[in-house]
Length: 282
Length: 282
Image 1 (cartoon, rainbow over the protein chains, first blue to last red):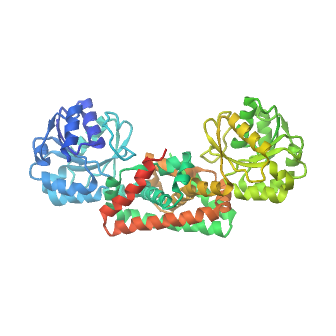
Image 2: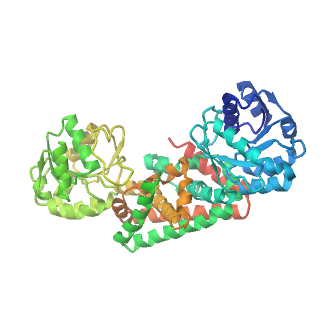
């Protein structure tokens, strides 16, 4: 199969490497903005051909992987809509799934039946450049979000390709995906970013940060993620994230009241709920 | 030297093992509530003698380690004040330092000059039982909080004993300690507990938690800490923690406004501040 890789970063590059390694993909055409990323992938051997436009890249492809930030996807779908062959499988790797699914329906027409929104729960956890890796997805979970219109051939090929990367695939509708990820990923990122910003607002933040130990390291790790990616996710999925943020405000307020009113027993019982749930997490 | 270990848990037990392993301590008398913990330590060989009261344990000791929760320390100091030899070094391992320092001054009189509040930045990060380990403190940081009254002999012995556990020692006044730890430890714990409680308040929390990946795992890890320990820390150090919580509320609100007003560029710039600071953290 011929793969068109749009966006030459860690996520897409690792998919291209793993599916070539597995044998399903025999040729990869890449396209990226900036052009230098595709050039770099060509030199690494991740792709065998560089296209000068997204439309050119997808024209002969059997599979298209859109591996660019969430906010770029509607524009990209518009660019490739005409050039796409009718039964080419199109996937993306964005962290939100309703908006891209809706955009595909709006833009791709019948070809949207061959669009399968996917979300690999893996990737870089620090901003900046990272080289693609054949085994990035090994034992990771990839969520596929088909809808009623998804063509069974497209869905089964999507499963097959992701499983060839070593990942476990799981289906979820796009809304359940977006709510679930808001809870376990987007909200923690928002809180971690806000926490770091709050520390930076302290005049003595350098002395404070110097005292950070393992608790700080782990709690704040995701605040080191790429701002350009996360601004899109937070805006795109805000209807799911912000009500959960409100719930955190509520539980923070509850804890604060028990602290200021010096109610150690009640405080312990609320903390213990949280603690037990975390300990029992798989 | 003879060590009296009050409280038979991971922190104190590991200190007793490491200082015996290093050779500075030749005999350990233990006391605990419940008695079964001391009995268990006796069977493990961590202590060689069980005392029936804290006062009995410290009576012949050259060094006393108070390894019990923060809120128990004033009561414990009262229990041992009379029995303590005049120049016995007394230390604790609590996560807050001003309150215990003040309690020592109030309760121990001249003997308070031999009290050195200490805080090893190490320990268990999940609630529940954990066996003591000789190398728990290896390469960890231990903060010592002397004041102007601290006797130089007590301070240098405190450094020496902690260094014998393999830890690096660092001096800080108790206020700077309490503010710093509020920022990099107590506040993250409070937020992690509140986050877990907010998820639990969702009727579909089991489906949500099932989607947690590496980001969730690390961000929420400290929510699995022992509630009975953390209720004391949050109450004891609230004057330092709550203003920082207010700063987090402020920065969360700022992010929320940029999200709802759809300002991706400004949002990216605020997120990027946080991200860069986290990446540059040692």
